[in-house]
Length: 438
Image (cartoon, rainbow, N blue to C red; front, side):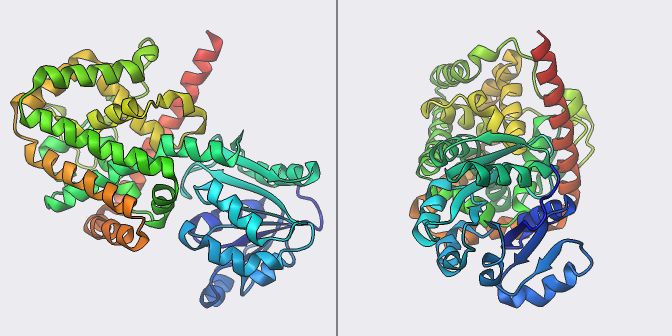
């Protein structure tokens, strides 16, 4: 859709996602007015001095008073204060929206602070700033808007070539909790456990190959981002808090069954959870295969040197979905690339009976991973407690220790992670096309 003359887009908050939006919208021909904190003004002016259609301003008042659609790209923790400051300056008849992952809270803040003559249309790109948005889900939430305003937002966002998904704020928050909250908790817990054990997992033979590549690359991918990207969803979304708590409970209870040697009880519980989650999808082709997974190693260790794994993180994931009555396939249209990879890892284990049998037997009979699983259980419970306390500073401190530990490998992990995501997205598209022809 061609840009309309005399229509400008405001971006308040020029972090990684704000910059990605600003560049894409400007490249599509729209005029973009952007700002961040005032101390960043000169740096942003220099950075975008040669970028056509992007105009940098000192603060959100100046952006709000001249822009027709203003998007806020700020941390959920400070959203209330930022909109309270700049919302009253919104141009008469303009549209506002945000990019936080907790939309129910976001729209309430807009309704509280922006004038009644301003429309509210929010959005949420379900991917990070380094992922190509083409074909990815882009949620649009029409809180209050005329048909003309809503059409303008659709026209502006069409430049991303994403799959538009129309939801209410409440629907969005429930689905993002179901697809993202526990996924993030699992990877955060793995990173915390590896840090506690002073392990770089790609250097340890037992952590290499197959779905271990998914665990390692995506854990490093999460920790290479900013902590607030995950904190808002976890702390401010009540459904997310409950699911993260259940994940910690599942990990703890399963680990206790392993320690107590209750093989039959563990097997019954795991297989019941697997049937609930994967029962209706037994005949579908697996998203992940060995030939795909083995391409994305950070170590290059040969296949014959790899060892089995108790896969407590995956067992706890499926048990958690079962306990929370979540069938992850129900939300696949609204899923992130990271979630699709994690779902692919769980189905890789659970839909291959021999592999699941080996996993359960190994968990019971071999103590190779006992110390790792102990630290993982501690980590899962620690993250659950941090989220339950609702303390953003505690979340930040807990996040930054593993982040610092793994930082030297972020560049390699990001490259491999991007390749992995690109391969999986292409494979997902091919599988969807094949199914549509059946």
